Image (cartoon, each protein chain N blue to C red):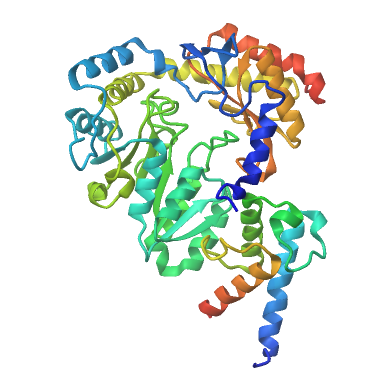
Length: 401
Length: 91
């Protein structure tokens, strides 16, 4: 008997991904990175269209300069938790800037986006509380629920009526309930009906946390996300997000209109028991935040790409995860073979995308997920669309009439 | 051993029917599945599909099932028994 016996499924997956020695769709080796949208993979220069680098800030000159200057000034790492020796001026300044950006009194920076959800959910909801989470939530939300001692209940994806019924069943306990949704879901690219969810949540006296991981930087006049764009910041209690997508770094945050968020520093295990982010990461992220705040040009370019991609992919006959254009474009298939063939076809055409299959996807769907970037050139976008057009007949996809 | 009352057995029948209806909705080939069959190995349900199935049961019975209550349930009978216990605790 071996501890590894339980990994039979993973062993089979590992073997299937090798596909006769060809580059795998999972953990694809990126050999040389050239820019926000270009890398060498398997000896070939490829267009990157699956990196969540929505604003292309990983190669922004000012962000890189800030990171280099921080290494020179503060060294390569903090070697300590924020609650010990890792509480540098840069971390505190970034938190203040995040809070000011939202116009809220409190912000906490976590070492990763995953830890932001773990740290916020596990600390906010205690043994007598309830977590009411959307059924299609990201793993970090489900894991945050597991780490918390609260009772977790799922409601149907993007269904405010279903949420309403479940909150009603809780009666007075609804006031001890934290409703958790994502503003933009990373697999299908669909948006939550935030206005309706906020109305239901507040009517029951519950609390609302919105994860803006894929929308922060990309939406809203100042880039604060879909809650800002929809004018809902006065109805949301907490917003969680990541620095590793639009901001081009690594780390996560939780901001709140409740000053007592500060108390989580003394209660959140994923905040306390880990080293704080490296100074270079904090400096680059802070600079990226400044760029996001004056980044209407980047958002307009990103959305222009999104509108073009959605229109042309639909015209070719592809089914998309949602009809509302956004930075995530998921090409949806019911058969794994079709999705895998398209991923391979795009790869052979010099385009890197994401292949996603169950159980990492909702409703048993198989996806080729494309993430768009303001840094994509018009030519790069044309290349992606041309490759999709070439592969459409192989997949039984036909042009929309 | 005490025989179940008719209302208890009615409830068990109703719950099992809800569980089986939900299973068939997620996996149409699972009609008449043995109550002790493992949903993963016998029917091929993954963890997300089991959670979707529980959501169908919740709507059918108008209950909320905490995620942790049925986290270990692997068969139709285990799901039925878990929900029965949950409803028993609430009433």
